[in-house]
Structure formats: C-alpha cells, structure tokens
Image (cartoon, rainbow, N blue to C red; front, side, top):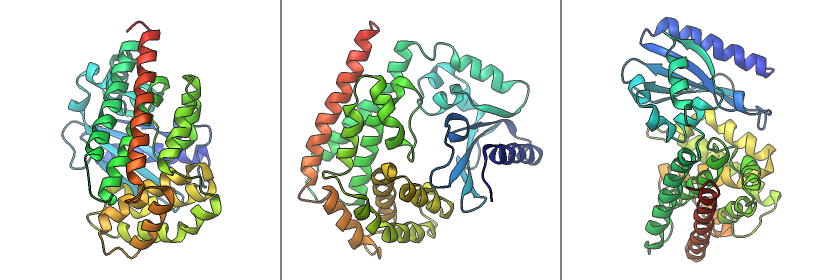
Length: 331
C-alpha cells in the first residue's frame, strides 16, 4: 500500500461517510492528529488516522482501534455531545480542547454542531491565564505521582514504573502545552526539544531523556532488546484484558517507528514494554529481558531512588518555568 496524505485523507472521508450512514446517533466527525498537524505523517512507514466521533448519547466505547494494514490503523475516539456542553471546561482540557482548537478537519457535521462548538471553545483559548490553567494541573499531577513514588519502599515493578512514566509525560506536557497541544507518545521526544527551545528552556528536553535512562545507551544496545520487546507486545495483544493502546494493530506502529527513528526509541520502548509487562504479570516470557533493560536504564531497585531524586529536580524546573511564564504575562 502506497501511503500518501491524499490516500489517508480519502480513507478518513470514506470512513466518516460510512459511519454517518450506519449510525444515526452521530452528530459530528472530525479528523485530528498527525495527519493534520505534522509535516511528516509517517514514522517508520506507519501512522494512524485520528478520528473523533460525537454522539447524541453516551457511546458504548470511548476508543476504537481498527486495523487497515500493517502500516495504517484507525484510532477513533467516541464521545457524547454532553462532554462538549461546557466550553469553559473544554478550554481547560489539554487533550480534547487543544485538538478541537488545533485545526481539525470536519468530515461530518449535523446542524453546524462543529462550527458552533469550535467557536465557543476557541474563544479565550489562548489567553495566558487559560493556557496556564491547562498546564498547572499536569504539573501538579506529576508532583503528586512523585510524592507517591518517593514514599514507596519496595522494588519498582511494572505498575510502579507506569506511574513513573505517566509522571514524566505529565511533566513534559505541562511545558509543551505552553506552546501548543500536548505531545503524543511517538512524538514526545521528537517535538519536545522545539517546544522547550521556544520557551528558552532547552534543558527540559534533555532532562526528560535522562529520566528515561540514567546512562546514554547506543542504538545497538537499544536494538538488541527489540526482538524481546516486540515479543512482549505481541503476547499482550492477545489478551482480552490488555490495555487498549496495546492492540495488535499498534505493534508495528510502535516498533517500526522506534527502530527507524532512534530519537523516539527510549520513550516508546520503555513505556510500551512496561505497560505490556504490567498486563502480562510475573510469568511473562520476556520479564527477564525487561529487567535487564531496567537495570541498564537505572530503573531497577538499586538505582530507582536516584531517578526519583532526579524527577524531583526536574519537576522543580517545570514548576519554575510555569512560574516565570506566569510572571511574564502578569498572572
């Protein structure tokens, strides 16, 4: 399959038209994500098509993943229109609000719902106090996670490290959202440097990499774990109880991107492999290899306390950045 922007746009339009014919509860369908926001839509030859479908009632599922090929899948968010009823609340929502505001393409709209809702959300969206109100809760959530982790005495297991990586994501996005929408998983380490540079705080991007791995591992070392990482993702994709983002159609989406673009490897491999091991449990056939990687990256029992201390310092820098940004705008 030859993947071009035009090909993907046609798939998006055709999918929207088909769903609108089949489901009379749909009020609106719009396209967002890398297809409308990024110049380079492919990472490792793979991508997803991010669609948001708005219903006149509470949908049965909030997220739907549909494989189209090894290279492309649909990532569909389903929301009730009631979730969009309060424009002020959406202005403060870094995910739904930002991606509704950030140049989505409307593919289906009943009675001008999209035009009206987007206009309401966009009003005052970029006021400094509104921007800051989107960012501070992310930093606060990361700080609370750090507090919980610092009080934990046991060795870090996959569940503990999931909390750690969520804290890193929240902290990074607290900075990223000062200058745009939040960064998604595959794009985090690619796009954060430019966001941090724009704020005059380039060290925040490098600091995130250091929190992923205490020592800089060469690409050969990362790739030596690729087969076991892929095996873990394949294994967890067969579970009914798997995290939704680890569905089978997402395995090449993660692995091909990481292998083709070295900059994304630490973040994508560590986060997804840890999530897979958490779901698979202690009898996972790849647990020992995952433990080897946590040792190399400083996330094992002996080194993890130092990483928690480093996270504390990083969060201090994030909070200082938000404070300086607020002072700049007189907030």
